[in-house]
Length: 371
Ligand code: BGC
Figure 1 (tube, rainbow, N blue to C red):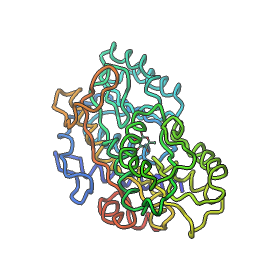
Figure 2 (figure 1 turned 30 degrees about the vertical axis):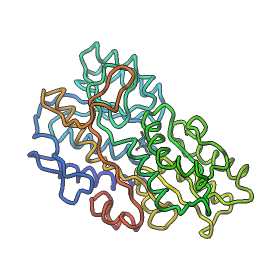
Figure 3 (figure 1 turned 135 degrees about the horizontal axis):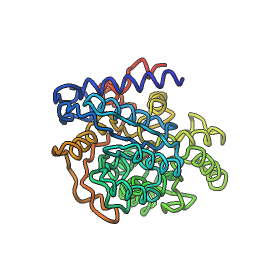
Figure 4 (figure 1 turned 30 degrees about the horizontal axis):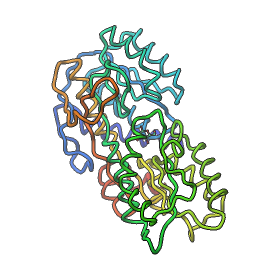
């Protein structure tokens, strides 16, 4: 399994290299989420870029790390890629070590960004620019740019999907429970905001019913986006509130949370006959297989090759003085500054469009999904 995952990730990185390598080629045609320009031609500067990633336990971050490394190396940078396995202090130490080792630029996908404020100041004092990768770095003015997906848009797309496909009406209401992301991750709050904008009217008119009443983010978030935590909370909700009535919709903010809910649902005796609609995020390989088999209803596809390519233009900007691609200068106020950002577009995928988006986009092959 591990071998296959690694092979898949390397394949993705190779596509990234093809898409972004050499001259400033546009991303591979057929790349679902792109069409935008890849980073500028190799500078061959040999400068050291340190990339701090949150965890290897989630597939997407493995792709992110592999893509960043491949694309930066292709441009002639030396890359120090480290994962902190969702251990906040380990990430702080890793970044301290990166600074001590003479990194010229830091790219950080944070675990708990508030815990990084001091180490970010150290980097600033040492003249090392920082790029925030996917997750906004909060309460610091040491960050130059932010490459991410439209995080509120992720929630909007999950919400729209639920509203359009769940069939809830006032006459035939559906039950829903929310399994949101980590409270120390700004993305989780934005996703929740986007989702609620879509489903609130249906909660208000009684088309959707949340029997646990756990609608507030404070009551439905999942620290560190942890699968086991989501599983336990789902088990508890099913026991306490769904003894006499089925749960119809699990609004999960990430594929890992969906897996947790699936285990809880199986444990509670749910079958194909009453299996709920389950949403997710990241279109992990496993989640995409679940979409094909019907176990998961949809996910949000985020092309990590594209995100890496946008982030690389920011690295080039701070190290070589070039202009990065920016498309948002308003949304991402981190409490200290509004961080100039590039938002990639997330895409909702389900059984009807996964072939076109995911296979057509070269993210996974048909063979990988059939294994
Ligand atoms: C990312 C998501 C991911 C989640 C859990 C978020 O910050 O934006 O893509 O599913 O973290 O790793």
